[in-house]
Length: 301
Image (spheres, rainbow, N blue to C red):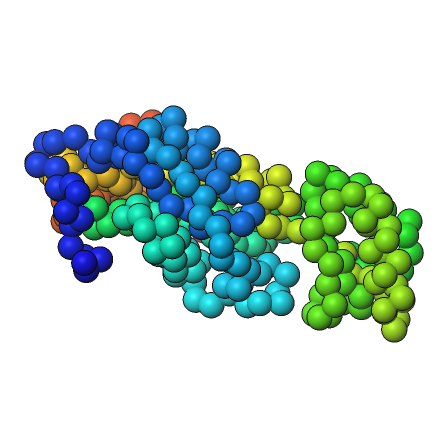
């Protein structure tokens, strides 16, 4: 069966009918391919909200599709990587519903001074032939240190929240092919540091936070927030066709300045769109009627 044809087990809701996200997913199994413990936090959100069963799919090393430790580069964009993982999980499980989680790390988008984590969740529904994307972002526990002695390494570990936050070790630098991941006890860390020192020509050891989901509590929290965003979107039905995922697709700028009244780049309305049909709705924001003069290009050029 083609991926763009509705699954025979269900039909597209009639106009004005209930969203599949509201009741059509109740009792349904959803494939999640992961080996890093993401199923627990995602299932704890989507299960109560949608009534679905998030089923972990194993038997495949997801690190083959990219690692944050740079030994295996990720191919494609964040959403492309998530789509490939979701499709693979659905194929392995033989299910028409699947989801995948994919993270990214970099500087914060405002000041560029702090480590930042963006988490994407992709829901694929081959029953109704649609995809819904959810996001969450926030500060990340993502740092590294080049240490020459155990005292510095121990201080770095404590600052990172070790052993709850796991660590990764390499001799020399961040590109060294010798690597130890998932270090989660002081005994492991001390032994690993000794191992790395012995293999480092300069005596320098490269330590970094392990950002795999099961090893990074801060990232796991962001994945949970992305799951909440996904549940909210799936429970919002399109007024025209009933498909889930009717959500904001565009923000309309032009909120007037509180001082001069000129339009600013701050949004005054949101455009909501369907992932299945062309239906769009523009909704004015009512929480505020003016923008701060600090956001006005006329008052604050």
